[in-house]
Length: 362
Image (cartoon, rainbow, N blue to C red; front, side, top):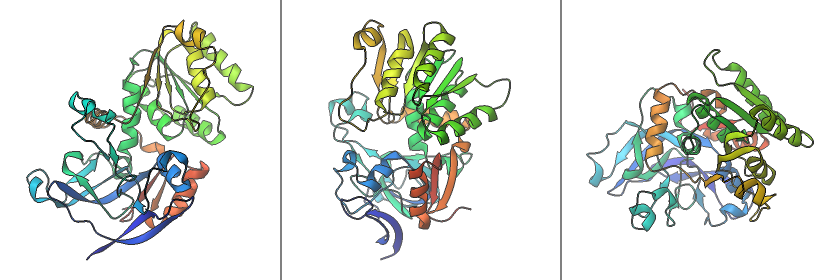
């Protein structure tokens, strides 16, 4: 049986991750085997590495990783007419039931019976990954592997940004980690009137300011980067309120931090929109001044999960082909053999988006 290298969560404990030799998977009738070219590391992978409570439904050993692109290596007998060997592809790694109410009413991204490849079953931090053919999407060759390797995460950002009316609007993005940076890029590309970008990390704030300063002059959305740490939180919120008159039109909350969630309700204007993508580290949070900041404002509030299958995927690919530039969000690239170094760099916050290459970077 041919062998491959794979990053495996070996045991239900912090740090139990090894690079192992595994059998190369073979396709069942409705499946595709993809040779992984590039794969992105995300916050969920960090939770897996540290065995945080949010991922303890996993049953190790499991090959993790769920953002990737690659080339078709083998096709199951029942779907041989859909794909050809060598085609450039990515895949939606949420596998849904197609039977429940949500699936049958066009909202399969909300399926309660979802299985996630890279958590429930083997994922893409490997030379090869097995995916249902129905989940595989062909990619245009114009999308470089360093971007194709994180389309899953970019889809989260696109879903979040486009769930609200952002064109010509004043938009605040709370939290400028990798997905916050992608979200800001989408708002900028889609014509936001003014972007307010907030964080509490020196590294994130510096990277965000560099991104804001590096955009083409003359057509870029005006950007204000705000430090929300300590006493700066109050000043930053007041600055948004003062510069807009009655608050921003839209807040896209990415961080999941309780203070940022409360800031979102505070700085949005009456009748404005708040979109909540960030997951909290706690089960419960306290909403400050609930009646004044949420009910009496008549806010449009929506939780965001995953990507719409497959509307968000096609929108994301169209945006990239139309000129959306997110390559600069990748600030570290490694061979898969250096996965421990890549995860450590991501874990420390020394890089924005980290991409690994099982076959080596060309």
